[in-house]
Length: 345
Image 1: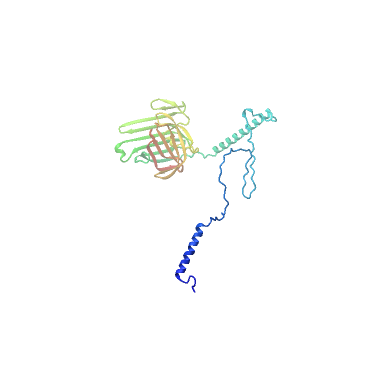
Image 2: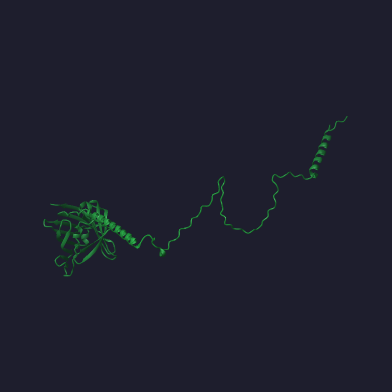
């Protein structure tokens, strides 16, 4: 009795038969498609239509929030035509004049109050620093600002019991400068003083250069209200007139920072108006140390000589630094204090 598929040959033939049947089924069976997860969409169609504008405002909706209505826009205020402006009917012309007069009175009161404050502040200013009866000041004269010492200068101030003052200044060359320039200068200022202000009566200047001597003199004729010079020329004498020495010993006014002062000054040959700009709080370096100073700087147009004077606050506002300035703006000579001695006896 034969058992099916008992031999290897039978099993191989059976496997081949099964394989052929399966391939035939897959090759010739009807096409079966699984249903799609999403429905078939219709083809896209594009159609142009005109845009219709409406006047209905848009309401913007936000998630989980009620619609926000647009805020009403208030109409702008009507512009006032200045040519058509009129006072309200209830204010008469007489009432208008009364209001204007009252306003002018209030302004006048404010101005009077401001003037009173200014006058009070002026009265509270400290009085000028009294001058010492005797003073000796020594200066080092440098060529240019901070340059090499070329000369020494000494000033003496003496005031007697009758209020007569005398200032004498003398300078002479020192060191190597004597090899190149042999000369000296002497100046003097005579007049009266009330202990604070100087009122010059005569200024003289003598220069010695080798074998040449030159003199200048200016006389303050108060009776004739004239200033008379060495060559006989004259000019009208002003009340505030000073000379090149007395201006150094006027107890300087201390106005506000940046203020300007005008003073008439003579050098012995003419009387000129000097306009100074004031700096009230400067610190300068000297051989005597740091000094707080009031600085008078002569204002002048280009091409004219200048002048700068520093007065020491710690030393009764006496001069401690002087600059003579050339027309090109450079410092010609610098006079810097090296010693101060004062006495009231």
